[in-house]
Length: 248
Image 1 (tube, rainbow, N blue to C red):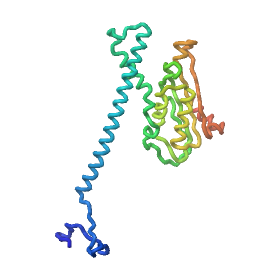
Image 2 (tube, rainbow, N blue to C red):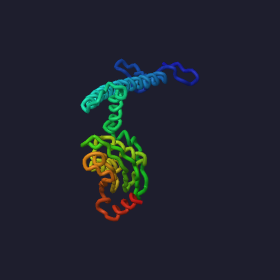
Image 3 (cartoon, rainbow, N blue to C red):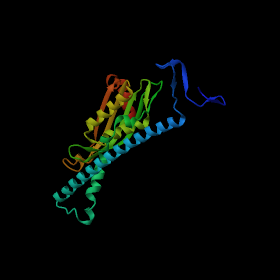
Image 4 (cartoon, rainbow, N blue to C red):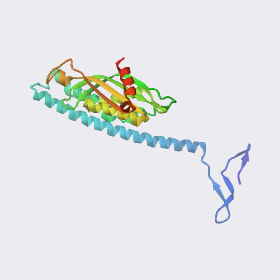
């Protein structure tokens, strides 16, 4: 049934042991290379269209949020006795809104996207410490900044996290409205969920503008918070080793 040329079948082949109800061989149709390629391209087109629709929706949402925040800033300027239409303030509402969206961009980030598969199997159980990670965050009580440095340490159990991902995890939680105590715990628990280590330690030392430029106005004050999980909490020697690294 098949025409043969140069040893290659030009027509679909039949299974020798497969017959239809009339006793004729059932023909197996094989997709040609061009058909497979077209199918693949069709799937890519559908996925690209879906991505484009999502981007369009996200873009509209961001535009609406920017407009709402710009109007809010304009109202604030009026409330303090300023003229938002004078030259120096004409673009201030939009600039301030864009800045605030950047300061809080951590709400749009997911931990899985930030880690992006950067978890590696390694036969090591020695402490890993990344310190002097700079943070800038906003106090959720007064919407003014606090800033400082973070030290993160963990004891791996056959899995390690890409070093840059530790700093990125810190950034995700810092770029939200925060209190320092919660920020410290969130970083520690995120590391635990990512690589399931035998222990995690996080220390943050920060200065809070809400204490420096208002209220008690103590410009030299610093706040230190820590979270210890697993052996970092249970074993004093492990905890002391970590704290020594953070101070050296």
